[in-house]
Image 1 (cartoon, rainbow, N blue to C red):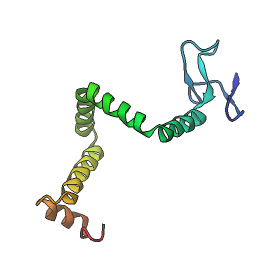
Image 2 (cartoon, rainbow, N blue to C red):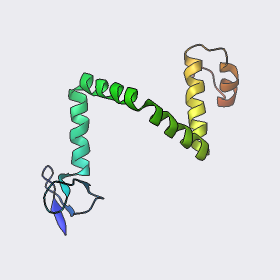
Image 3 (cartoon, rainbow, N blue to C red):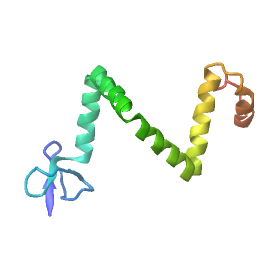
Length: 116
């Protein structure tokens, strides 16, 4: 079975791979827009309503801070590359803020702050 996107008009398979699910929308329970068009509309809204979007993100962080931190901790513990990336982001942030522990990081990276 195929479904036509309301925005781009493409005929795509009527699956959750191409359309987001929606419990109350029609007989196929899928949104009328394909995922690509939906993401484009969301990005456009976020750009046009920057302050409202940032306020939403701040409120979401405040409400779910513990959940976000637990997820990040589990991910660092279970995924070595995630742990390395997290450590490097943290170290780079401290380097850019002028913390004194920048020397080992710069030696590991093999370049200076000026070159970054």
